[in-house]
Length: 240
Image (tube, rainbow, N blue to C red; front, side, top):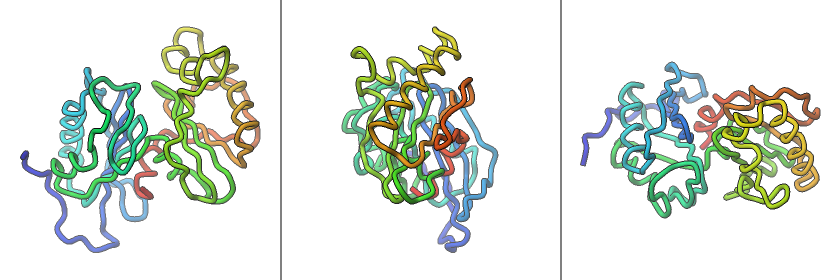
């Protein structure tokens, strides 16, 4: 087994340091948070390895962790369905991720407790108000989603691969590759139509739109739709 990354010994509750990791289809980000959610380091970002196999991604996380310094626990946002720390799907990563025990594997490599959840769910933890029906979507390499009811997560919601129009899914119509192909104006109009469908489907109180491409939206969104910082994908790790 590889040497564990150094962590603080017997930290006091007020001094707990959380290493937040966000795995994306194009980049992996890392940041250490205080017990109150204050960033203690500069956000680091490296390209997602190709092929993005479990071994390659974990080695990248270990290197990011070493550069961030000492920490007591780790949260990981993963771009796919996760059940109790085990990855089920990873549509925007290469490699065999089905049934991979990511939380356990990283715990062994890093020497501290690790929790793993869907990346959109983690982002939701960082932005929701905690009451009513709140929906989170992330616009990045693909299309992520998370649903919360009175602050409680509805697990394993994967809207990105649900048909939206003429047999094409949300991800087919709103992925990063599609945005680059059709331009951000046409892509933004598609997003508006998708939001209208989501509103009729979930009757949400609030919709939060995050991910790296949220900043590229060119149209005005409804009042109950809020664009949130991509950093929330790391900050939500504290709640996780």
